[in-house]
Length: 247
Length: 247
DNA sequence: CGTGTCGTTGAGCGCTTTCAACCCTGGTGG
DNA sequence: CCACCAGGGTTGAAAGCGCTCAACGACACG
Image (cartoon, rainbow over all chains, first blue to last red; front, side, top):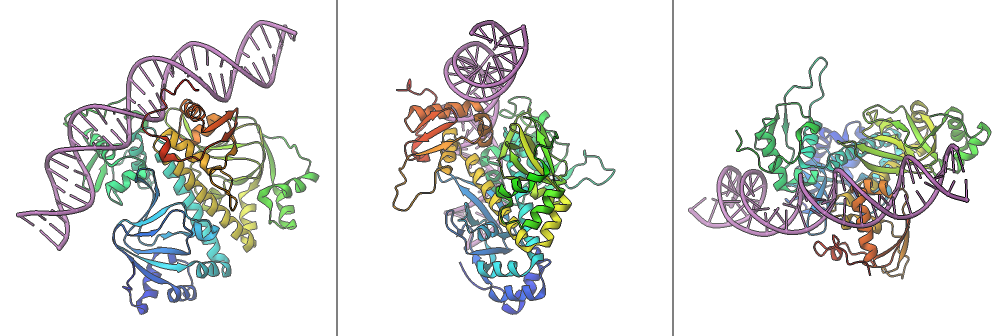
């Protein structure tokens, strides 16, 4: 867990291109770039463990981080998948509470580590930055609530359709909701399943069932939603256990 | 849904006693007290519906509000129970997104309604207030993640023990974790069950099972945890279906 | 070409849900 | 004072659904 891979001279530019640092002033960016560390993680390498306090905020430069809650039996529930430009750990740094989740690299990743003190100093000095962070935390909270909506669904088919519905592109004016659309799964099916609160087997079966029904078309991690998804209509009582041999 | 019940002269004092307004200055309090409305809700009366934007922040003066996500089949999942001094709706007001949940009175309740514009003005004018709100949203996010931890547990027994563990008072120095403690259920068992993602029947059965095992003692909504809860050890394979006749 | 990971498919078990009836309490009105 | 009713909570029986374990297939990588 280390290795600088961006020369300090380029770091400032690299940060400037990350979504997280939009709206940051040049001086703020320079201060952070100077004080921050780069961290490299191999796949499945752990950044933080549940129960320990977090003394830094992290921003994903490349790769993907998996935020999970450990469950009895070595299982885990994915609560967030953070990709390029996403940040991690503000909530713990701000409240000073120990973090209630694990953070693990979902694949080889590079992160920027911003020390908690540096982060808090920047916030204290700049109302606009505090406001921006407040908006970010609010929208992360809403995002989390929408995730709960998915997990709260009773059956696997409902969870998956709910998930697919959330990935529908915003409907343009005058365009019907019956429009097909593409969804690119942002992580391994295993991780997505763990995010929906399903075993990878069940997730696989549900996708197969939906494909079999002609509702979606699947090719690897890329799938296409063909019909309007109506969660209620799809589950007319135990049907996907023995799908027709898939016409 | 209306009725003033506190005379304007006393309103300022009433607000000052609510946890939400700690750290607010006298002037801020006066401005809000002047601009805010009081709202009375009967039990099960709805304040807001999923999908509609929220144009105000609400603070619970008395009673209890239930924040829920509607599920297919008329069911709902409780994501928060807000009591006296708790606030509702900041996240939507701050992000301008439509709220992803319903808000319904769990019992007869009185709320303070702070218009979104007024709220945002106070925030914009005061860095300290923005910081405080940021801390509040961060800690609500962490709280929500801890709720997810509960719901992510596999079995009902695990969910309930996880829930009870979260209500253990902070362990004092030098005090063992084996100490019994009291838990007062903050809402109807029905609502708690819906928060844990269980049917009220299963919740009832799990509590009966734990009582039967001598792990807890239950009297109405007041219960006492007698033994240290070890989620792993409690569920040694299907045992609570046919509890011994309850020695 | 071996190896490991990811994903799929199959079979059986166990838990939760659902529907039902019942108990108990508190509130209401005669 | 009591009958009545509504709501919350408990208990019982049946069934559905996801999980687990296992084996297999596909694919990338060394």
